[in-house]
Image (cartoon, rainbow, N blue to C red; front, top):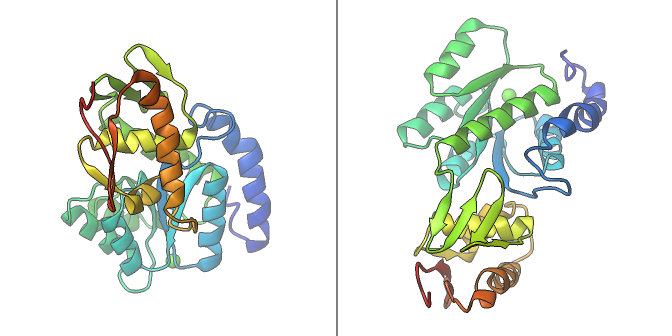
Length: 264
Ligand code: CA
């Protein structure tokens, strides 16, 4: 459809994509009301206006979105953080998208990568896939198509992870966003679910406040760590206190840890 070809159309296209094309497709992913920040993506795009539009579009889709404007920053962010998908432009200042992807794979980083290729050239696509990209999309593209492909990639990524996380008698199903203590269903908000997911993916590991903020909120989140403490306390009220357990421990001055079997 080449909807993004003319800059003047971009805003309108985003609206169309979000309200007509994208929302129905995303129902299975984001329960009504929004699964805020459950999925975290990185956009590496040097065209500032395009990057901002994509960021806004994906935020409307309830993703946590980080942006890098060149290959060096993109590589750095992708090597430091866990993303569910990376949208990577090929033509970048510094090191190009192919090289970013190649270096990530060489560092044993396997985030799903979708490359934005500028030209209708078969060798760009081949080069992208050779560099370790999972998918590509040619510019210009419609936001709806990009969003659909990113959804497909993040789903595919989830398949390689354990389908059900189990820590003691806590269970969490990332696919359905449900969690239990024993046979009791835990009623968690999206943020609490995302937080519990992080702890259950790393049992007995100290998780710093910074890491929690990075996982559950955007980099751009400008509040500070007391919001983390607050959410941890909400979570305790749901996963520990009613059950007489104390699995979610404070590690003073550092962060938190979900202990396997503490007070169980
Ligand atoms: Ca570019």
